[in-house]
Amino acid sequence: MLDRADIEPVFFAPFVSSVMRIEPSWIDYNRHLNMAYYHVLFDRAVDEAFALVGIGPAYVERRRHSFFTAEVHARYLRELRAADPVRVTLQLLDCDAKRLHFFEQLFHATDGWVSATCEQLALHVDIEAKKVAPFPEDVAGALAAMKASHAALPRPAAAGRRIAMRTSAPAGSDERPDSRLSRDA
Image (cartoon, rainbow, N blue to C red; front, side, top):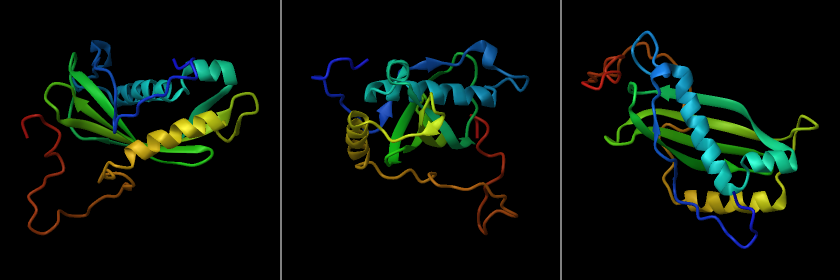
């Protein structure tokens, strides 16, 4: 995408994907979006953001480096159904010489509510050697610019959460475990 050295990408905070639609074949026997396809949507947004940074498919082909996911934490907050329009935001939380830590939110594109979140740690990998490798200088610079832009955003409250079972609702809470599943809740 960025084949000209004189063009600098603009990093909106957060990055916002194009509008995507829930495909009918992605609906499961529960009549909502199957969990696997939430990750397809998150991954498509990552591809868009990475292309802006200059680390998309052309980078993989030309430089023989890519990104492998090391860890993911997804939260499913509200159902999506066939043909629903969605957008994903991506916030780069941190990066170092070889890793990216980012947080994504999947929004209903017209109604604005959050359907799911995904926190991810990705590793920069030399495809030939199958080893984690440092970013080239130009990529490190683009990531630093994106990180600086995104640093102005508040850290998402859900970032860094762990999975745990609550034995009971907090005192005074009327939250039910299933209260966030329905659009009608």
